[in-house]
Image (cartoon, rainbow, N blue to C red; front, side):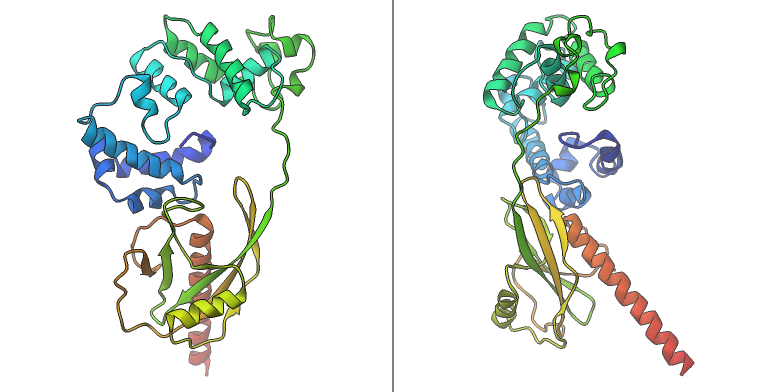
Length: 326
């Protein structure tokens, strides 16, 4: 959870997650929807899917014993060299280096490393530095100290250099260039994409949802059907032959930003008669927000459903008041 997400954001998610999945076996045996439900709003959902896969692998392929070699750990979904090094050094006292964002920032300033730290050649240089520095004894303490130093002293903005124990040898500090390191990722303008989300709602107040493919944006999560144009929306409705009882209501467009593009979303609400037939398809469902069906949904989809539910509830109360007054 802490990969690419701040501690203050993670804490409530972590506490709920551990309450629901207090053991490896419980997590391994859970449905992936249960995991993604508790991940909703945290973003980078591949982390949740990888965590679930890893629990299954350890429980049933490693006899519930956590791997203790760097190669075995890196073979698990979502665990790279630095995460594996952190686990082995902190949990098992092994001599392993780490290179998380905090450590990269310290090294880039200390050695005045040129180039963005995400580049392969820069990564290679940083690994060489940290491998040379990491002691064989008390390796876990050293790694923890570096991460703490990076998060509390050698921070991204306004670092507390006067209080840093490394300021006597830090090249960026000695050259009064701390603000220039680490060097930023070359800016690349994010492209804009558009989509219409089809919010199909039946007379029982249920929303039509479909499960997205496991790979790609919102992989494995439940979402509204997505169309590129209003013509595609019409085609979708004709193809599925639902009995529409209202004209499409187009809501205000809003922007949702992913790591590599902006998505401008236009929700379209369409009310239909409740279908008589039950779909024999595990990848679609009718979701009732008033019931306790726990499935993983992207934050924008969850928000749209809540907004529409509140709007319908307010309209219902207003109509009831009008009837009573009449």
